[in-house]
Image (cartoon, rainbow, N blue to C red; front, side, top):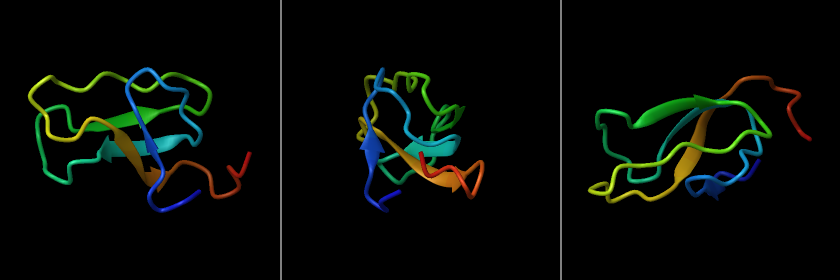
Length: 64
């Protein structure tokens, strides 16, 4: 996993774990727990961050 890897809404998530909006600010709905292979959730229209980044990986061996 790359530090700067991001997923836009509806893209397939590459790593299971806790994701946060790429804007770096805390908002309502700014965090999401996603499963590898599933689609990432939408972000609100007024958010400056239009992508998701992995904050905490669910499995350390999730290299696939």
